[in-house]
Length: 406
Ligand SMILES: Cc1cc2nc3c(=O)[nH]c(=O)nc-3n(C[C@H](O)[C@H](O)[C@H](O)COP(=O)(O)OP(=O)(O)OC[C@H]3O[C@@H](n4cnc5c(N)ncnc54)[C@H](O)[C@@H]3O)c2cc1C
Image: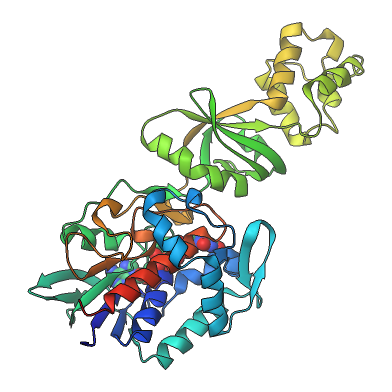
């Protein structure tokens, strides 16, 4: 069997794993990484702790579910944990199946990769930004920004998406893929803070609360989460919002109107809240809400309920005003006006169309010997270890199949 000469463009999560697998299968592997070191983005993942997989990862946690299902079953979360355990990473599984290195340090993941890549004689060339790839007869020539060029039998494109471009993944891989004849679907930030239309944002800024949140489209609930939200002067963030942001931004980029609905009161039913107002008829309406909702909400929600004088006694409110106020406590909607930019996003939605990639090998259906991994493809998952899991699963398949002499 001929030893395959493989170039991996991008030394991020998926590129490093693909390199290990290909080298373990006897290929000669070179990583071309534009930064001065490999794995830079991994350092910031999981707030510096690297949530490297999720034990509950399932196809339903991703877009393009048919495409990811093979990779996720072959190189699944338990195989991921085994792989890293072999390299020295002991897993620590926390709530909702999120797995971290026991060391609580994302840098551990990079350290063990560097050790393994060196052990396997993988050549790592840093400060090597690839600007074009030319398919020649049965091989590839890859050109760097500084004029150097490298030849290879196979190329694995592992350049990531556009989220957090200062980490190195600035979307340059899309152009490389496009130049090789691949279609790129619309890309937009996902797992990202949402901008909202509301006159109250300056006032609400800083509120951090566990809240039930729903994403509303055409008056239907199309997503729901429960957990912390955090208001900023631009809109809203927090784990619940990040999870809903992918769907929200999909609708927004298609020009559709969608809303974030907050349920400010939890733990009490509407009937119990009505009773509470009945017992507070002699109180000023603003004071009647103290102890029920976060203080910072009070003046905003009263304005939204068209109650101008905040110290109006509850008994003096019109029926319409009181009903509106009670409704708002359980259903306060904010129009979504976009999101923060790629600089603030954790993941890119969209990318190289998966229609043109073999889901079992990650090989291009258009260019033999060309493979794709990770976020560069039109694959994104929920927040919680799912995106790195896809980087590992796809990196495994690409590394394995690229190393075969076919
Ligand atoms: C703040 C933040 C926190 C995150 N936390 C988590 C988490 O806890 N769990 C989780 O599962 N996911 C998390 N993610 C997402 C996860 O990091 C990515 O999905 C994953 O790193 C994608 O892997 P990748 O190999 O496709 O791309 P990357 O890891 O982005 O690697 C791509 C590499 O290619 C290099 N490159 C790009 N273009 C070129 C070029 N032209 N030439 C040479 N090199 C190039 C880049 O410099 C980079 O090193 C987080 C993301 C961010 C931004």
